[in-house]
Every structure is written in C-alpha cells, then in structure tokens.
Image: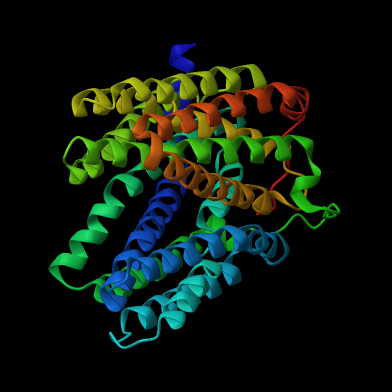
Length: 408
C-alpha cells in the first residue's frame, strides 16, 4: 500500500503538463498573498492613518470574497482563458494605479481602488483545481494531487508577506504594489497559456443547476466547514499577535506565524506521500479533530514564545491535509456545469470565516487577553466537527459517485 501511494504521488510530478501548470499557478498566486499587507502598508503611508489603512485592506478582502463565486461562474460559462486574461489585466492595472497615487490622494479613492482590485482578482486557485482531474491519467492520484497543490501553496503564505514588506522597505510601498501586480499578470498569462488551461471548456452537455454549486448539500456542508476553519485561522492570527505583544515583542508574531505555515507544509508533504488525505466524512472528522485540538492547545502556551512556536508547528500540520481532503470532496460533489464556482466558494467561505474569527478574537483580546482569542479558534474548530457530523450523509453520498467528466 505504501509503495502504491508513493508511486501515485510521484506520478503527479511526472504527468505531462502538471509541473508547468502548478508552477505557473503558484507563481501567479504569490502576489495574491502579498496584496493584502501591501495595500495596508501603502494606504497607511499615504494617509498617515491606520483607520484608513484598515478600510482599504477590508475593502480588498471583502470585495474579493464577494466576487469569487461570480467570477468562477463566468469561467464555468466562458472557459478559463478570457476570464483569466481580463481579470488579471484589470487587477494589474488597478494595482499600478494604486501604486502611483500621490500622498495627497483622497482616501475614498484608495478604498475604491482596493475594492476594484479585489473584484478583479483572477480565480487561479479555482481554475487549477478544476483542471487537475483532466491532466492526471490516474483518477486515484487526484487526492494526492490536491495535497501536493495545497502544500506548494503554503510557500506563498510563508514567503509572500515578508517579501511584500521587504520590497516596501528597500524600494517603496507603491513600487511594491505595482511590481506585484505586473508579476501576477505575467504569471497568469503563463498559466493561461498552458495547454490544459487553454483547451479547457465547460461541459457542453451539462445544464447548470438552479442555485449553482450551492444546490449540492455536500458543497453547502463543505462551505460551512471552511467558514469555521477560516475563523480558526483568523482568531489564531489575532491571538498569536496578542500573545507576542504581551511577551514584549510584537515583531515575534511574524516568525511565529511563519512556523505555523511550516507545520502546514510538513503536513502536506506527509499527506501527499500517503495518498492525499480523507475521502469520506469520517476521515475529514478525524482531521478536524486534530486541527481543533492542536489550535486549542495554544491557549496554554501564551506565556512562552518557544511553546507557542512548537505548538503552532504541530497544529499547522493538520491544515494542508484538511484542505486537500476538502478539495477532493468538492471535486466529487460539485454539480455538472458549476465546478469552478464550487471551488471559488471555498475562498469566499475561508475569507468570510477569517474576518469573523479575527473580529471576534479582537473584541475579546482587549478584555481577556490572548487566551480568550485562542479560545475562539478552539470553538470554531469544534463547530466545524459538528457541521461535518450533521452533513456526513451528503459527503459520503457524494464520495460514492463517479467523478465528473471534464471537457478539455
């Protein structure tokens, strides 16, 4: 069994077109991991106000989350090429415009540009996950492929924010924004030029269901699960930052959260070698239990930075396998004609949950300290487990049907 799973994980890299497809996708998504912090820093430097900077960052995050399912629906109806080229081109143009704004620029213009950037963000994650079933000759290798993609994506979260801040210090925040937009546009062009993306077409025999991908009970369950896991991550961001501040070094929060990403990377490597994660509700429940317990353990570590870092590595190890399992389940559960939209809903759910978790943790941390913020993460993890328990039949029913045909 171990030999078989190892061969399947190795076949992902050797499959024709897969390395270039994944590499161009990851490179294009690296700037996406930088835009939020770049917009925050740039807005603060132009306006001199953290309140304005928060509005700008929030406008970007909210508009991106709202737009994702609708942009995914466009891909399902029109194909990937036109949507990727138009969205990345518009997003890059707006980023360059934001980067060139003078210090006298009015704050509402900054907020409007940030909202436009979010609305125009290319749906790269949804597109590459839609393509994976088409480029792999072995359907049983698909869960491992999602695990590999989730693992590689962690690199953008580990290196993206420090790179964004470094460019801002060495050059300027405006130049960092413009350069990131141009890199994103060029890498998206490279992704859209890949044969698998260029040839992908919606299934001509599929009739889009009324209500889109959310018509599927399994998709609704997975979206709610990702709202909860997003809340876990948003609360941990706030809790770890608060704990570092209470320990006398706010700057330590960055490296600590980097260790969280390292843990997820290691967990993803293990999941890839073992075949990709859970296939059914019971397996997903076990992963969510590990995720909830790992992050709940942070509550008792807030007095020691080394303890926080060690537990973050352990807790992070459950993240990539959990996401890989959810992606594989979405591939099975997505209604015909709404596959890309289904994957796009995951980003919306995670972003929404992250914002809610950060807001709840932020409200508590003022009065009760970092442990209270981390308790929000633990509660959100438990809620995710309960949602899977309630929706287990729909997840298992979806897992038992054949994979959807993908038109290429």
